[in-house]
Image (cartoon, rainbow, N blue to C red):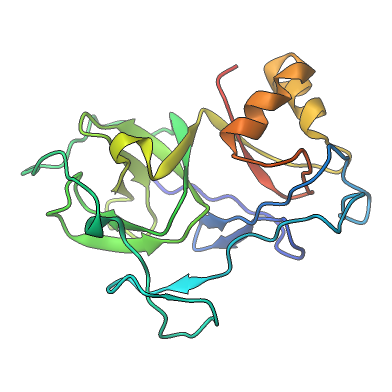
Length: 214
């Protein structure tokens, strides 16, 4: 099964859809609503996120955007929790949560570092979770995999942020109004802020947020 989320990519702070995967850029400052033209009230303090490009082999980072730049992958410092002969799969095909990558990651065909790499997902990619495996890996929806799913490592909860659901910011939303509507209490906005690892309360129309348990 493939999960498709279609959102606008016309301005900073919005989500970009590429092959069914969301690439996000975080904005940051005070709690403000989204204006009708799509911009927030305080634009000077917005953080457009990490723009560095990286290569999947050597771990060297290129901040100039060179197409031959190299990507850091977790294998260099990660301790695998065991070799898996057969991929762990409970047969579930519906999302039970969502994960957001804290860094660029290899996506594999089994829940083990010994397995084949299916694709590479960039930092801030959001994917639907189908299963939380016993060895700290997560089975996710993956359009690049022939079977429609693949696995990403989350040893010691280092590499992924995990939420129960996602929400796309609409015009007029504030982080407090979203908390009131989805969690039943505007004061729970701090949970949304902490889960998404925001340094402030600014959100932008089209931005995709991870939402905690109700």
